[in-house]
Length: 229
Image 1 (cartoon, rainbow, N blue to C red):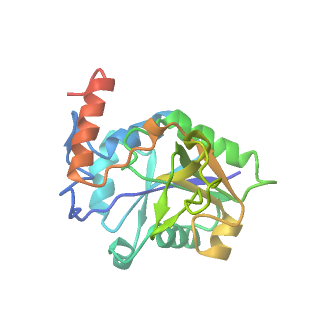
Image 2: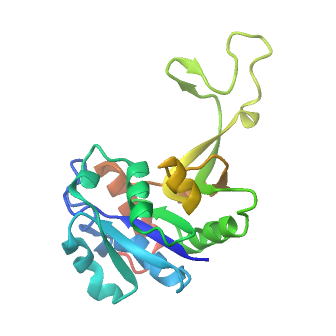
């Protein structure tokens, strides 16, 4: 079974966290926290691609990882704010259509361990008779609202209020998605019609999107990684 791992890394600077993908975080470039996990834990038969609009992104990491990662050149539109994760997966699968499963993993998932990434991929690969895709979720309990409506309870009915521990929702971590070739090419998306929701602990669901997140990641790594500065 052929597996490809797509790692989107923009060359252009983030507006919320300037130069996020390359700036120092606790002693090494931000993106290297996730790339190191992939480099150490992924099956050597799996192909891993740094996906960027500029080859300089790949060259920034090339010496550190030698030939472990390949380079995927995305067009400028796919590096724009108009492009989302579905677009990135679709263009990647279309241009690399010789794989059975496509994985999309984000360097912003700064606390996601390589062993869990590998376990989730292998779980999907061994369950293709039941699932056509997979994404990571974390479990939360409580009462949630969206667009002015209660999501998981009925506030207008006396018996519509469950115990908070029974009011469980699953939240996408946005760190990792996987899909079979057939589903990717059929839907143009990164989640198919019958996905596996792979649960991870809340501590592995952290995503760096703002400077506040970046500072929190710095504190977390300083506390948990003995070699972090």
